[in-house]
Image (cartoon, rainbow, N blue to C red; front, side, top):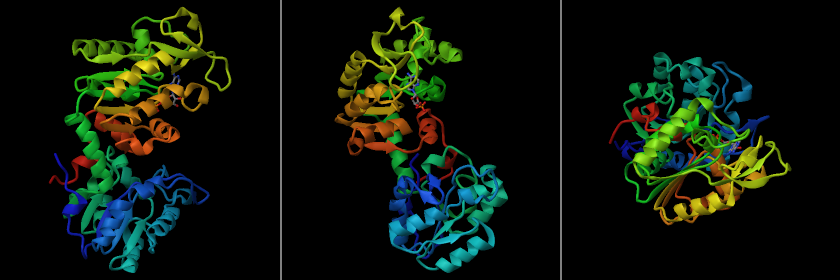
Length: 396
Ligand code: AMP
């Protein structure tokens, strides 16, 4: 169901409460990466340009466990935002009550307010109705641009919507819903999914939801070893989730029944330890010579095979590294997959911190159709779950 967009709302002269994701890394008051703040600028500048009076921004930051803690203050984000938009941003020392009201009065018509960390109140994560009402009382309309928090039913993402007259999705939220929604519902075919990373358990729902939808499923990273175990292949000391070996077998059986191209690595880079500089070698998967070593990257034959499948696809989604990407020696599979995805002539959607870092390292980020910064929210969406923060927003 299409959601109302910020462009469907009358903002002029109205108090606009916007949930953003300013959960940026801050150390000693210094923001080391402001990507998340910049990601919300389209919605922020749109609201300002369309007369929000004032624009009231709210966010969480870290895990302050329900009480005020200066270490988790959003104040540095107010300073940074002010630099980015070239306007004063009034900072409110509390996200509700008199401090918030005072900041809103001070900002006045066409001003901008940033409220202090929502999680300084335990009621935020408990989705407490009175807290949600107090937040809502600050505003006339509500915009949610924090896709990355939409999988949580918190007061600022879900409860608040019950107490405002109108709600809508911001541009960042809308872009995530459009691109992730398209690959699930209307993919151009062939549709290939590449999944990697540490654990099958984190992505089990995603795999299960994708098996009926994709034409090819390529598996890499440590999660491949749980599948190998299911095939009774030697895995040495590689990471295996024993309790998921049965689930892995079932997934393979379902993929086979659907006749889709389900691929596991045919070769891999093995080493005695997960450590930079250790001796490593390429072995065929199944080769007993792995002994008690561990598989830490996909090998060259696998890279070539995956590259072929990716090159022939019209829609590709990718989440999770093909190996221990943090160590250069085991990063090749992930980097080559990043390059292959970037060369696709079609829709490409990537998610997960390591995949995002890999396309950045390969210098191809701007060749990806959509980089999903939603983290857990993206995985839940791709796993077929309805996100409470999305469900709450009014439909068109
Ligand atoms: P995830 O957060 O589930 O996407 O997993 C990412 C992590 O998986 C990264 O830190 C990788 O180093 C790790 N990883 C990928 N492949 C392997 C592997 N073969 N063995 C151990 N760890 C791996």
